[in-house]
Amino acid sequence: MTLKSEIFEQPSILNHLVVDQMKHIQGIARELGKHEFQYVFLAARGTSDNAGVYTEYLWGAFNRIPVMLATPSLFSIYKQPPLLNGALVMGISQSGQSPDIVSVLEEGKRQGRPTLAITNDPASPLAKTADFVIDIQAGQETAVAATKTYTTQLMAIAMLSTALQANANKRKAQLEALKAIPEWMEQTLMLDDQIERVAQRYRYMQQCVVLGRGYNYATAFEWSLKLKELTYVAAEPYSPADFQHGPIAILERGFPVLAVVPSGAVFEDIMNLLSYLQHEQKVELLAISDEASALELADVPIMLPTGIPEWLTPLVSIVPAQLFTYHLTLAKGYDTEVPRGLKKVTKTQ
Image 1 (cartoon, rainbow, N blue to C red):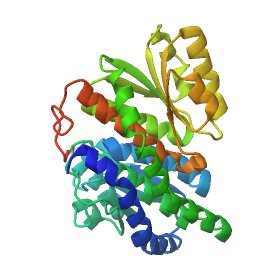
Image 2: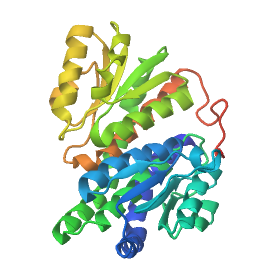
Image 3: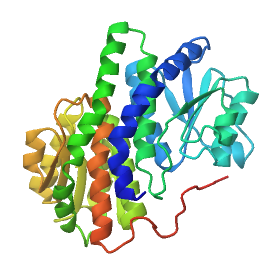
Image 4: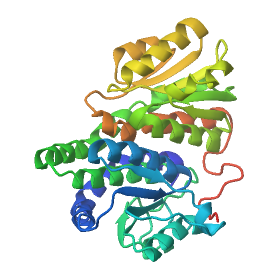
């Protein structure tokens, strides 16, 4: 397997995940309903941490469940864990092997809290620690830069959110939308040749800003992480709101701004900023969007399929970002399979 083949595997893998795991996840949702929890205490690192950001937005908006991101060093190094009264303690990890993430779930169990693991290895230490396990079934991921394990994590999070939905009609509509994701992904993968040409334009890029808000705040972080891992570009992710509180001062004419701008509740807010950046700052804007006005504004437009509900756009919008990063890595003359200084499984304390 290569990085590119794993990117192209994603529609098939996500389709199988929905078909194979939905009943299991619905069973987990029923069991969680027997536990009294007021919030989710979530531990993750790297790409999985970005999936945790998606969880914050999705479960907060759709399920009214607050999500708090854990500080694992309080558990693993300082040995001073906070009280977890009222928490569902959750770990997200592709390998399920990092000791600091496992330590958070171990402490949750010691405090008598329900624990949940989302992982690609159901035999891992994280899975063995948890009361409930969702196997994302991504298969072996050989590329160091995670792609299919990220989107399957997002899918598992969205599936559990749907299963926890109390309203039967909403639950049915959300499940149908989940089933449509592989087709939207397939449409996006058809842009591969276009994105390969686009990437050449950025082969000398050394720094950039990546913008995304709401559900796609996670996409901004994941895209910037992939750019750092593979192209060694100093890519900084921001919400447009945070970006205006200081970081906007770094901009100058021609500065690369990469933006994820799907239609939805935050579209107008992002567009107001991007219009200012284009007309006043004269930045170099690449936009991933399903809206004509955003695509027309961009120096480099990348079109998303229309009709994707905003809450599911992160599963699709990351695909052109993955392709862009892959092709930019090659354009810069780097190895897409062996990024410097990295290994597939990182175990942190």
